Length: 523
Image (tube, rainbow, N blue to C red; front, top):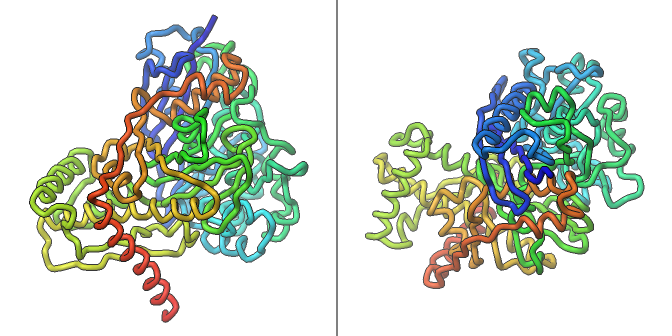
């Protein structure tokens, strides 16, 4: 009997695939790059066929690395960024790029072209906003659709199918037009807890009364991990698998990470998943809905059945550290070697100066808006305390204080969550930040929480493998798959001696927010 699972994770710059056994052990992993087009300022597009090809190549390589046969894989599922794919009525690619090239048919999650449209959605004060923190983000689907309809009417007229990227991939794999409850609830204003999930009056209010004529959206969403059917013959050949492999309803990448690190844990309301890479997502779950401004959700069943999920986030974290390196005169290309060089030097400087290193240098990290807890996509970053020093050490000091600011931003979100009914004291961190020792230390010391780093596997891929396991019937349901495949982690407790330093920094952090608002008011 086939008892292996395949998980595909599509991020901002690559597609990754992992092969797992039914106990959650990662047996083989591979990664392939994907293309991005920057057609205008604030615009970013993918080619969905390029993404599918990269996913297929990664799956074939991961299976080879695992040393298993195609027929050994019982189930597959996909997670992806919340990017939006435009297709024609016959499945052809539809351009969302100002250059008109149909290859670029996908608006990337980080694309902020639809800021004005997001503000219009917020101005409606419609009920659906109660489940997105009260403010519509340009990273969600509705503003992006509005922008395309207004600015690319020819593309809109040709559009017959719209997908969140994870749903596009399950469609390519299975042929099913089903959509995941995760993607629709989190990004498409679908109210999964209601008998009628779609609010047609909301779409009419923002000029999208015809969206259902262009999107091929289902009346009901499919729960994460539900069986969408077998791989098609073409998909099986492309992926190097067989048509006996079942396809599970997928999820957004951060939600997969949440499943991978806190799915199946008792006392789940004490645990928070921090999925941290280019941006950072913070996922908390509860048995009852907790709606409040500045945190997306609550979403019903967006990860686990019968649980509500609240999502906080920072729109640029790893991307912000990369930006600091590129921006500074002593910087350059922000590759892994440069990050290590800077980190090593910071460790040396701290050995001499302690936690007070660059103590008068303060950063407000909202260079790409504030997703949580202020829900202000127009927010901007601030740096206070610069001098004429342009040396490599000055870059290191700025990098260190930017990392401190990122950790203080996590503390800001945590305080909002805990003020609204959560009792979070443990952070489970997954993603690229686990490779940055400064951030991992700061997440504990600046927040006062225990930080758990997963061991032995990629937690985002693991969460997606859990969905595949449920679809394949290796477990009786998604919750059982989470419990059966969960991997333990390494815990780091906060350094109490560091608390006074970061308490002072946090007071400055909050004051900088206040002063920025005051400056904006003057302007």
